[in-house]
Image (cartoon, rainbow, N blue to C red; front, side, top):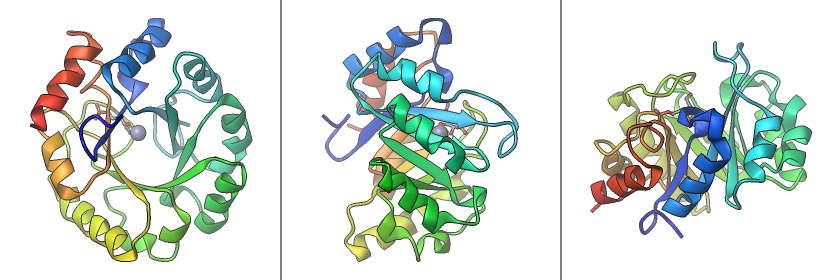
Length: 223
Ligand code: DX5
Ligand code: ZN
């Protein structure tokens, strides 16, 4: 069930308490999360190193939601098989991370997963024109990737609206996800700009309150 009509919530476990990851993921599922967003970083495409297939497999055993895996890594194709085996349902590659977007989107789908394409803030929407029909999801980065807890960049909003118009004009069933700085102050703007999935890390896992009350505040902000 969507967080609210027409908008899915994908909590990012990057902000979760890793000493009790299973419980955090179960809390998110119970609070009404639609997907779980998992940020894979390699220390090359972005400076930090985070998690990989081992963590995806642990999350897979902790909930039944779609696992939305965001690959901030170079040579992402080297991980496709292991992530599939770990239980990923959607793999999102960055257009800036490969010369072979077309082939890699097809490879993800051939393995039976949904294929997403992510765009950094500086990447124009023209990166989508030749491959939109091959994607199940476009991810618009609303921050520079690598770290949670940053402020949403307002300059990314016109691009988000233009991509919403592209998807609608093409009449394709492509999800439009936003990632970075989504919280109770910004979530309504993301819905209004045309997002169909919002990622929230620190907006869901903040250590000050329960996951359920953080998700309730996001829901309230959409009313
Ligand atoms: C950062 C990651 C995000 C991150 C967002 O590169 O892609 O998914 O967890 O964190 P918040 O929601 O705190 O901005
Ligand atoms: Zn992410």
